[in-house]
Image: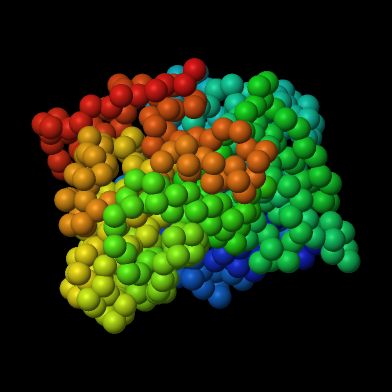
Length: 505
């Protein structure tokens, strides 16, 4: 996942973009970048690190203009990016385009070959976002064919992008001399929402990953960008929208509601906070049905994303809810730390126990999910060191057993603790007395309870169903081989569990 934002305003946008990226910082902590437009001139600054570290006063002064885009990066390959892969990316042909992308293209290698062999374009980095930018640039050139560039041309180009690109992508881009462009893949896997502000000098528009960025900047939420839809906002604030995919189907990533998004955000019309409350309600039902003998003294959440679920679970079971972990706000989210060693080290730096809430008690710790198990193992150990008698561990999400290839750092089987293991096996691995997972159907119901208009979801990390229809076992093996090779590990390591995929058509 990454955070993206684009703004067309009546006053300089550099501060708006900076503040917006701070509101989206939870979506990526590896790198950040801003590009503004002043007429047909782009001004760019980007670099490695948190938003507050990348941009200094002198950098902000060098970003004039009333239109711009921003990006905070989360490395989907599992390791920190080099500075050259920080976004946004830029091409000067045919019109001058900058682009920021959240998601992952599953056919990036094929597109890269096409770019070189057929489109005569060279890709400079390993980033699929640069591939996507060049596909868009090439299709814009074809759609314009020497004519005047306008929103209709952009819609034709985005339609061609949808025909060529596979995977998940939410995009904000700027075209020199035209305006802001935002579009979403035909399944709407990654989120994108549009807002408006009626300023004294005219309408101002914003597109961003989450509604929290709009509301925090004083914009009114208009609506989510539909699957396969593109919007164009010209420099004068004129708004245009068009569905550019023949059969779009909204299938948002359900992990956005579990973990990725902020609880105060609304995604595709669903309150993330309300969805997490329902997750706790359904998880309580599973405990009542399948674990009636557990003697639980206290329910303790792992801050922050599991708090609503833990609170609702405790309420439904009539149990005491307590805060037993204190979070250091200056340590990043461990799930999106770039490496396993860094993740493990940062758990103890990020969390500290309040021992009186554990000492002599049977505790039920509730987390949003269990992915690699590294964080969970450390948390269970901390609870035992604080004096807990028994430690039960509940996950508001089902077992993560399959790689995610749509922009979340879950790419290999070996790293997913639930792959090939039962709940009892996972409990032994993390040192808990019992592990209790949410059921997938219950998770879907929890989100639907908060938004009954949603019919289907992208749930590949739980069930192995890849909605784009192009993810094969060979593709996943290649992803794993590259990841292992990049870390100097044996890509043919024995004992890796087999994947039983449910490949969607």
